[in-house]
Length: 398
Image (cartoon, rainbow, N blue to C red):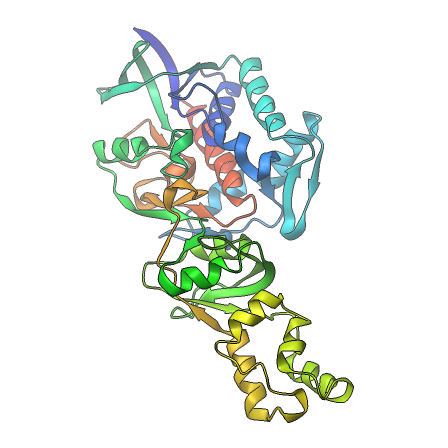
């Protein structure tokens, strides 16, 4: 039987960070993963450039039943700590809008940095390994496809259900349930919306159009608003604004979309009345919105009215419509394309400073498997780094 002080199941962002940190503190560490390659989710992230963190990380960027749970870990290893790692590794990077940090060249640079650190601290990584059974006496005992393994600390860093084509499963949730932890009901997050019937046909005709919007949930005034780009697709709606709100959406919810977040309707109409009084409303709107979208909106707004004849009531009607276009998705594209899983191991069963299960000594849960889900823009990677570091530090004290 092989013996290690620490076994990490999952060779992704959180698992590798935990392994490195524990090994830095002198522990013998084995990382297991059933995939043939490590860190596949890092590889495909950010269009292959890896949006590895965000400069504006706060607890407000995360969804959880306990909105305060993530604070301790995020403070213990913050975005600048990881940026220091990136800089020291000689990886070129840049900042995009909203504080998003990306590699200049390839996400593979981040993967290689992590693997190099694992190698330098003696972390053993075994890929293509199935964990068939886990039991616990004083230590944990794992039955695997490469033999039996004994360990003092067991870290579950297996991710969750998003993007099954790269190996996502419910393994981590099952381990949690085995040891008596609650699992908060899960759903796909950061995922496009789909529609059926007439709405699907209408939106399909707009496929390829992108525009800045302000989107919220129509029935839930306390839900956040997101001002970013929206993309019409052949199946429905996508783009950053839509992905963001999808993490808060539940079946039956409608979206409220402000199609004109950056212009003042009354001022635009007043100017047009002076400069183009004979122009049609369709002409005015086509100056600001894609013509195909204007044609669709013409089913709800009289586009043939001349600007000079628009009454205050007319202006208020089309302003209100454009600033709160209400549409109800039938569903999302599901875990197949979801970037994250909302829900997971209940934070009430974990120590926020160490990620250790409160009632099972030596058992840790980190990363996406935990009920902490970040917004789009590098926040989920920062949670992986921070939660992995928190567990690694605690394990280093064993």
